[in-house]
Image (tube, rainbow, N blue to C red):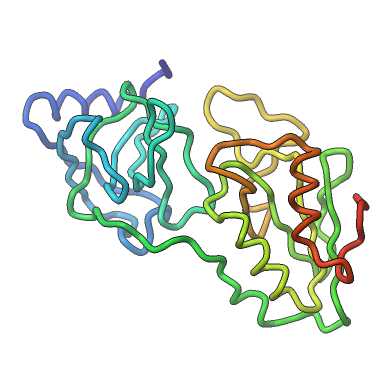
Length: 234
């Protein structure tokens, strides 16, 4: 069981005593539904009753998080900030606090925001390059970076949409990297901040990681031959 935040313990006590507790939201992870500074009411509800679309409160490391439930994985609940590209680590019964009914409701499937691709570098047809931890993921001028991660909210079909819309953008696909560093894990040379990539895409079911060889095969099958620099990592 992870070390809990003191705030989480206070909220847990209030929920046990009164069935509800209030907390002020911070950050932009739940925009546009929950704005920074909004005071939300957490209501006690059995962990087993949490359903996709519910907004749940839970502790993650030393923080209290309010994100939306999108499914279940094993004995945990899978959550995601409405304004974030990556799923959270699964929420366990020990870390779960309650739900925020006011903001519950299912959201439409995630689609990539292609607005940034409307302004193209204008240097001809772009190329697609594969990057692994053996090569530096430094961004080049006029290049988009796509991070491949089992924690990504966007499904593999989004990769097709992004590549089709890339036009004259060069595209770097980051394979074998970890984005962010969940509590309890140690950052390595292959750990990048989420903002290192313009898009994050998963190749299979949420949280199901593929080996590098399988990931290369899946990505390669979705890259158009004329645009790709096949088998090249740089």
